[in-house]
Image (cartoon, rainbow, N blue to C red; front, side, top):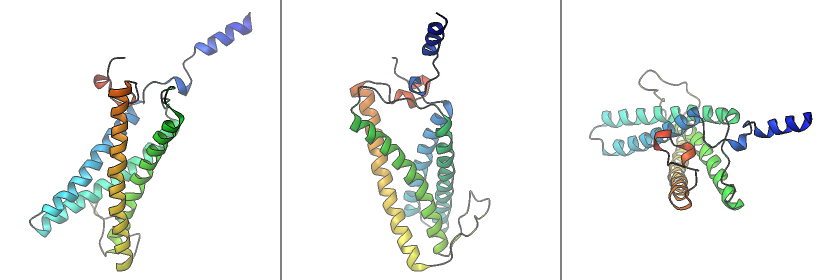
Length: 199
């Protein structure tokens, strides 16, 4: 009698990670802030190419570098927080291959968001320049001048930028598919409450 009561209480307690239906506020805030920073970083490069003067172009480059460094720090924090946060499970009805693809894309994006700023910093240093952080000061040099290496680094930087656009697009398309076609709670789990679709 006593044992069955304990078992029943344990079963009713919502402490399992699998029972969480939404990401916490920190995960949501970091997710959407990262998206805004990525948009800003791409916008800065577009604006730099449209700039009328060298001084204007340098301003956009400095902001681009600062946003990239912020994305790197935010991604590291996000991975740390994710280890301790409660993560909603994907829908049970979702095929295993789609679940694997979803998680693989998620971690691939984490990797690209981490690698891209590092490539940018290394390229800047290899090109005999310093990374200026929000016009407050320069980051320490981590790599000496090297023209050939700089060319390879910027090529990789450009490649990763294209990959980011592709996988962010796939990630967004999948979220919209879940929301409007499958009509499950995958996107709801990352939306603020005032934007969530009623269950």
